Amino acid sequence: RSRRRGAHRARASNHEMTSAVTCNAFYRAPASNATPCARLRSPSRSVDKTCRRHLFRSTRARRGALAPSASVDDDLSVASSDDRLIVAITGATGFVGSKLVETLLERGAEVRVLTRDVNRARAKLSPQNLPKGDVAFVSPDKWRRGLLGATHVVNLAGEPISTRWDPKVKGEIMASRVKTTKAIVEHVNSITNDAKRPKVLVNASAIGYYGTSETDTYDEASGPGADYLSQVCQAWEQTASGVEDCRVVLLRLGIVLDRDGGALGKMVPTFQAFMGGPLGDGQQWFSWIHRDDAVGIIMESLTNVKLEGPVNCVAPTPVRMREMCESLGETLGKPSWLPVPDFALRAVLGEGSTLVLQGQRIQPKTALDVGYKFKYERIDQALKQILRR
Image (cartoon, rainbow, N blue to C red; front, top):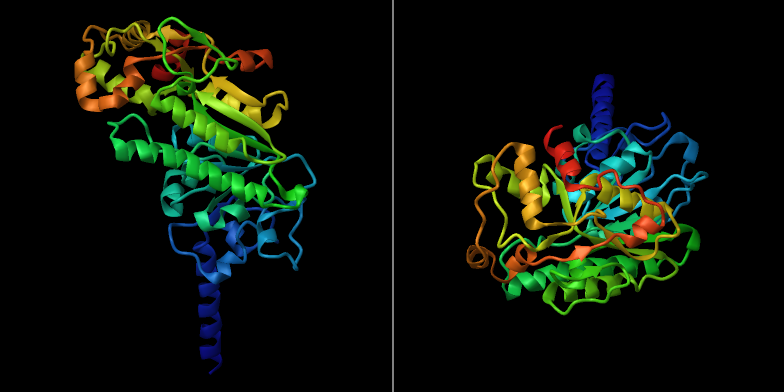
């Protein structure tokens, strides 16, 4: 009978540990008095009630524990006696977002990933691929709790736009940006305790705000264009600006470059197959930025109070598409000789071909004015770092 009681207790203990493993969050192992859930990195399993009680309670020992009487909402807000960033992020699994998560963890921040699919996000942001640190994954029904106690919010969510556009796709492009942003704004505005409200919202937008031109140069003071992408960006930014008592940075992203994704990730294989060349006539402007600098400007936006409103996230030296392709071919040691004609791109992408056949020359005036130092100002410099590392 004694052995049976011992076996029963062992099974109960195993169940408790299993409950901890199935939590919707994983953390770097903190102080020894942390909850069991905080000590484990979880696989993709469902969440049970035992684990929900521990969600987000773990932090570094110097930050203190939650009061036993904390409410459900308070479970996600942690008292902090220092200036540590607590950043809630949407779009964290994307090309820019994943690099931002890595950078934040390297600098000791706590990261809360607001995601539509916890299992998918956890798989893409696996502990093996990230620096050690505090990361939690939050499903849509708990986004308000994920925002409660966060110091900053970065909203990068949105459906890809480099595809063939039809009325359905265009609706998804607009809705994925506006609806997500509206949800974040409403959640933040509903937090009545000022001490637990995020103080900064960095909201993605795009240089498509300005429309396209082969002759004009745009900075943050320039007005919007009249095409579809400009309308998307305007609605996106207007929704973000509805957040109350919060510094808002509208991050107008250019074409982000790095090897493992984005535009360059699609162009490199073509050049390596000796089939590379400019898109269209090659005269369209290509306003680019290295992914390290895109993340660098986001990091600057989180802490620099001088950054508010629109911020062009581009390098200070835009180039023509032909120059970009020639530099890419030279860096790879491959020719840039086979242009892709306009009609072929329009046949494949339809209206979406405007993304690559038309461009705009953008200057990052605001970033330069506040003293941001670009790591990569020239396209050849950026391509050499990306492709020869």
